[in-house]
Length: 293
Image (cartoon, rainbow, N blue to C red; front, side):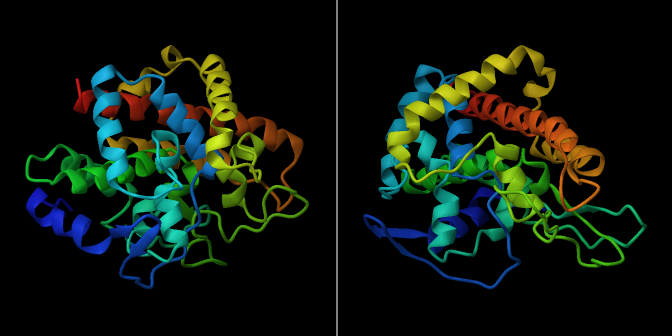
């Protein structure tokens, strides 16, 4: 499903309006429960990877747009990637489906439900269109930028690309949210485990802005470990292709054999999660640089 910019603009402008610093006015709608894709540490680290690769023009334009959405929790590019999760925690639920895709796979032949049209790949495309449209106001572009940051990052988490359907779970497991884990200190379910890149993105109580230097160092560690040249697919900027990549991991690697993932599983899957997050940063930078050359 494609929307023209003229049809998309009211969707951006009518629902979320920041009327004062930290104050949100929004419609709240009932929708499918969805967990965060990467946690805040993950989103900020991906943002740091992208930020380090932006050209000067992109940096200048982004610096103009970010302050137009007044939220003290996310004043810069790194923290702005967390904004969609922040407003969801505030009660803004209209964009829940923009965080994920509900493509499915079934190891036992269970029928898979229909795909949502307003999924994360769709959200990337529509917000990129709004960000580049001459018909969009600067305020609409500011919101679209924040949506782009988050949705590009989310689309690289395999458990935001789909769910597993089985005879015991006919409606799917909500991207691993219903796959409960045992004896895993950092996560109560499979989705949460991958949110933290299997331990790489460790949450703490540190203020976001104070943690930026540490997370930039983590970003450097990841990009040194997984350089952009090792990702020939980094040039692929079609979000539908990203979802296809994620579902390959979903089918072959993501699900452990038991509710207690063993060391072999963790050692195999942690690099997958790290690579996907790093790739998200590379692609995000390429997208933004393509807008502001």
